[in-house]
Image (cartoon, rainbow, N blue to C red; front, top):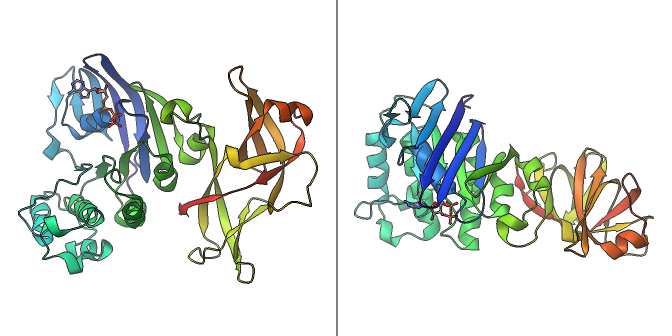
Length: 365
Ligand SMILES: Nc1ncnc2c1ncn2[C@@H]1O[C@H](COP(=O)(O)OP(=O)(O)OP(=O)(O)O)[C@@H](O)[C@H]1O
């Protein structure tokens, strides 16, 4: 795994839009660049890849300067050890799958070993597709070939521009496991663009949030997603908590999977693919969490977790109070009405029970 840092300190002006990013990104695992349409995500990736020069500032990978506007240095894209995968993959349609892979292998100027073309073919399940023409592939198969081809240029950094955007939900679910494996399996840190919070919570280790050309936030995915007010970013209210839990076992009779989050325990509809002892991510939407001040017994909801109110955030424009609840070291978000907050005398530090109506598994780690 790379321990290098990508130092970005750039300004780029386009008609009526300025991208201003100053941030050192430790290149480890997967980093999501998240933000609404027009935030500058693609422009940032194009600057990193070298398709565009900045007006001011510099980009460095470790000790190597990739561009420096003051010194008029700008390495061409093919000189940077970067693999860029476009949304639509951009494969050579006149070549077979094998032809596309061979082309990338030939263009690879790095002598680094690590994985062979065969390793890549096996990892992306491409052996039965090698002689196929690109036009005959499904969208998901194309993306697998595009990922494989990008990796064969042996990049030190993978840049993926909305790798799932062109796919329907079924195809997305086919590709997700491949994307999840990339950094660990091939030792290549990845920066990917997304404006889909589900994708981000499934794939990202770190998240850089861009809004109007500025970095609004940068932190671990668990922190960013749990702290983020998503309304300005997605146009609708979707605040949620992202938690890490450990699968403690399955109940075959009741068809449930048990997950521990610190001292708390949750049950989910059974998912036998989750091995006991594995760490998984759970996303719990604020609108799926209710609060009780005493432990309710005559209720169908099974996931009732004791906790303490950390904060209550009311707004004049909304009937809802954004509520943070500490459960051990983790936090839940709940969307409670102003009326309920008053009726239950909710205040910071109060002991409560969080009633969780629905939990989404956002993948194993
Ligand atoms: N070549 C260009 N000339 C002028 N303006 C541009 C150019 N390229 C991008 N822009 C503008 O820069 C802003 C950021 O664009 P960018 O494509 O980086 O956004 P984005 O966050 O990737 O959006 P999306 O999610 O819709 O792809 C937009 O307002 C866009 O219109």
